[in-house]
Length: 422
Ligand code: GLC
Image (tube, rainbow, N blue to C red; front, side, top):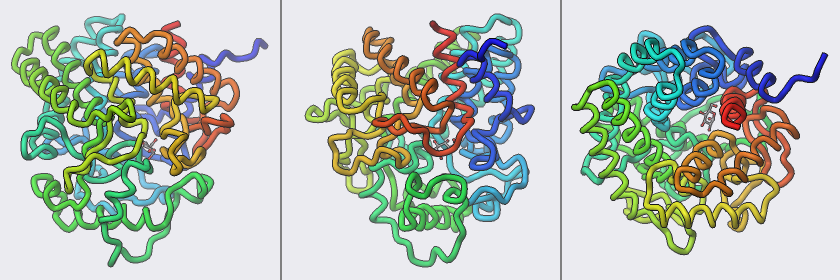
């Protein structure tokens, strides 16, 4: 039998983790549905089965809260493999969910599936149903996470960023207390090497925030001002801005001018406000700690991911040069943190490793800005990693060693995307 191609192996990973109407990121470590994982997974699924791709996003939105929030985890099944589970969140949902959100990539994903769909009738029907739901999520963000109308939204917990353990959050987390958190037993360190995972003190702070929000009954209109952790992340905002712009374009195609106008206005306001996060010395955007109104001096991939939105071309070109510079100091691009920073930690998650999802979004943004050579460098690096180390959750950028969980869904989905374009 001929050896399986990377494409076939990737499709197999998607199938192994498919639970019918949603896909788990990987069995064991992450046995439920995660928000941005699912949206990015649908991009891979569309090449195999378009209807299944739409279902992946629809299942996520079936658990959208009445206020518009789309939760970061949907606990479809009971499992004692994961902490913190529903008994910690206590959000009182019909199907248990977490109480916070994740990078809103659904608008982008839906448009990409819509644009490439071969079954136009199906795509129109499914996109039309999703449109008001994604719109409600965007509206929720600006109402609840940008209460002063700056144009950019804050995350209230590192887990919302999707870059859970980034160095970006360290200083802001220091201001989060740990008193009264109580005893708990982590599961992540049983599935993955503790050296790749967050420390105990960080975990205490994560849980303190969860308990604080829970004590406010997960009332989103109160959480922002009550949170000691409010960070404006350029990567997260770029994803939101891109999704708003893409939703606007899809709304035009579906003849929904009201949704198109609102989303276009949010995207334009966000793009203008993003300029306040630019750092000339770093050649990228930085996070801002909203509680003290200060830029966070941490050159992470969040500020590079900003290229996913239609930022000014001069900024995109500068970011491309930064990616080239970073690629000189590692074997595999794009590291999630600048290796020149002493806090860089090659195998610890989001503090150095390469992730294929961020690679995908950065390459997409840079290609749109005409930076095709750098986009190609990123895609080639991604595919090299797969050949060397399989479909891992993330990779050490220096050695290429696979880290975290294995047989990872979104890594496989990105490979299907990369290979389908070539
Ligand atoms: C980790 C990642 C997060 C992802 C989740 C499931 O928590 O940091 O971005 O959604 O795993 O893959």
